[in-house]
Structures are given as structure tokens and as C-alpha cells.
Length: 215
Image 1 (cartoon, rainbow, N blue to C red):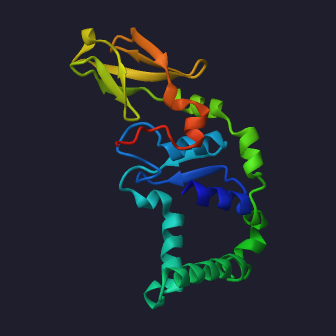
Image 2 (tube, rainbow, N blue to C red):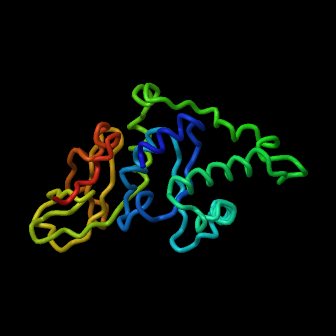
Image 3 (cartoon, rainbow, N blue to C red):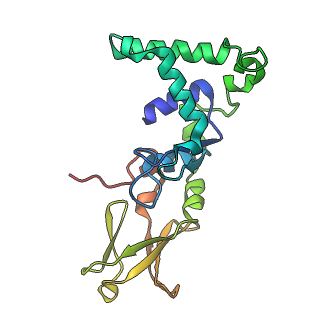
């Protein structure tokens, strides 16, 4: 997915925001942004998650997918390659030729859809990808974790020690963006512990290695 997005950004430019659903890889059963979302935030792309089970909140995209399915006729394609080619051709027709707005194509009315005007290249990402934007976004989260018998909680599938004194308690976990540290606090907002947010180091985010994979 990251490779395809980089290719798309290079062709179309970086979007200002992504409106996405809550399924993988955009969303997750957890309460923190996914690895992919964190990487996009670092590219200065805002993330907007639709409420679960409310596709109408992203109606334009849903209708666009329905149009693409009708026009491309996937049932008539002999292979995935043929389907991809048909989708690309239908997309170009709908964008550049179909008289959808007062007899004009969408491209004629909105020439900016040709390119967002927001640069993207591999060299640009290497120079401008911004960890601070990720941390500032995460500073708006306060996620709840229950401390286990060993005094541990889990963040991005990594265990962190809060203390056996707090076993069985629910704690709030936040990010201090100034120093890239996690903070655990109790329900009275008393700080219990803080530690380096190693998951959120820039190389881990850019390589989509924030979440520890099983095995």
C-alpha cells in the first residue's frame, strides 16, 4: 500500500487530507492511528476517519466506486490486468471527457484535479517528512489501558511497565510531543509513569514498523 501511495502522490501530488473508513489498513480495532496513518500524517496529510458503519459519510467516494464498477464491467474481464486497464480508461473518461457539469468535464471545471500542487518525490519525503506533525496529532489522544497482573500495558502490541502497584486499574495513556514520551496517568490525572515512545521514532514510522508484529 505504501508503495502504491507514493506512486500516486508522485503523479497526482499529495492530497491535503484523506477521508477513510475504519478497516485495515486505514483504521484498526484499536484506539490509536495505524502505522500507515502515522506515516501519512508525517507527510502533512490530515486524516479524517468516517464513523463506523456509516458509508454515507463518504458518499462521493462510494458513488464513484459504484460508477466505476458499472462502467468497467468487471464480470466481462478475463484477468485482473484487463480489469485494471478498464478501470483506468473509465476513470480518464469520467474525469476528462464526460460532460458532467454544464456540458463540461470535471477536469475543465476543476483543473486542479490534474495535480494537487503539493509536491511529492522520494527526495522530498526524505527531507520534509515531519515526525512533529505525528506527535502533535497523537497529543490529542488519551487512550485507556488496564494494567495486568505483571504491571504491564500494551501499546502498538508492545508491553510497557507501569507498575504492579497499579495492577487491575485503568490508566490513561497520552503522548508528550515535546520529548516523544508516553505518559500514564490515573483517573485523578496523577502521573504514574513516563517512558520513551520508541514506537514513534521517525524511522519506525516511515518504515511502517510502529506496531510489533507477532512472530
